[in-house]
Every structure is written in C-alpha cells, then in structure tokens.
Length: 209
Image 1 (cartoon, rainbow, N blue to C red):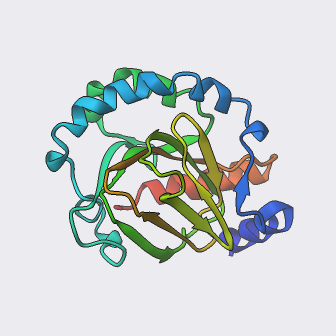
Image 2: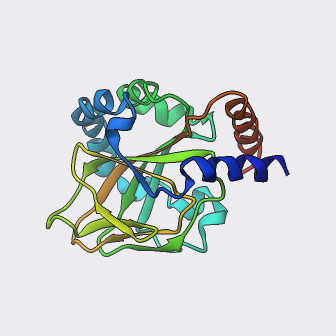
C-alpha cells in the first residue's frame, strides 16, 4: 500500500515522462567529461568478453528477455551491493560512479551484433536509469532504445536518462558490439517521500536478483 502511494505521487509529479534531459542533473556533465577514462578500463574486458556473465546467468529473472550469449553484464553494484572483484578491476570507473547521487546499480551492458531486447518494463518508479555511451557502432541510429513511444539513439560520450517503468525495448542492428555504462539511481524527490522511497529500495536490495 505504501509503495502504491509512492508510485502514485511520483506519477503525478512527472511519471508520464519517458526521457529526461541531461541538463536537469548537474552531475551528468562531470561524468561525461571522463567517459574516455571509463572506456579505457572497459577495453581490456572486451578482449575477454566471453568470460563476462550473460545477464540471465547473473539474474534468473531476465530469462524471459534473453537466453543467448549476446547480452553480457559486468556489474559493479547491484541494488547497493558491491561486486568487490569487478570494482577492483575498474577503480577509475568506480570513482566516477560515486559522483552519481543515489547510484545503487551500475554495470557495463554489452549487446552483441544484431541483438534485440524485447519490450519490457521496470517494476518501480522510484529509480531512474542512466546510460552513458562507451562503444556505439555506426551507422548512427543502428543502436537505439524505445521508451514508451519515444526513440533515441546512443552516442559515444553522451548520456540518456529515462524512466524504465515505461515499456521499453532495445536494438543493436549493427555488426559490432554496443556498450553503455548502465546505472540506476534514486529518483530525486523531497522529504518525506524521499525517505520512504529509500526504504523501499533498501528492502528491494535485500532480495536476490
């Protein structure tokens, strides 16, 4: 009941919006300014991408979305839980992630050539999703995301921010790999709604993925 109330308030405020503009979040420019630093730590991992877990192997709940080896996920944080070994391998990326207020989930999301992620939606409006383009194949627009009825394409070094509780789907229609830094962060709200939202997200982090 409390969660339903929070969702109702969030929807009333701006829950109809699909994408948000980067300028609305002061930290985005700082993160974008260091995107090549993040990519440098990504590149050695891509040389051994077959060793990176498939998303459905990390999270059983994703098997409805993907069952092949074309969606790899290198997690740093999952609902606030730190993946210690991965964080040690990419210390600069972790340093930059810590600039994002309310960051609770972060990973490299790696889509193989021709991969399509079918329509789906996140379970809760209490977070927003952030993507930073790290490796985006040409031609422009071949790697894109639909959120609701809005479609945008990734660009290297640029950000997309959206509400994943809207139906969304993803295409990589190129012949190469698409990689973004994928982050969930706590949706900015005012007190006391912010405290209630944090409590709901904390409880979510206590459950297995």
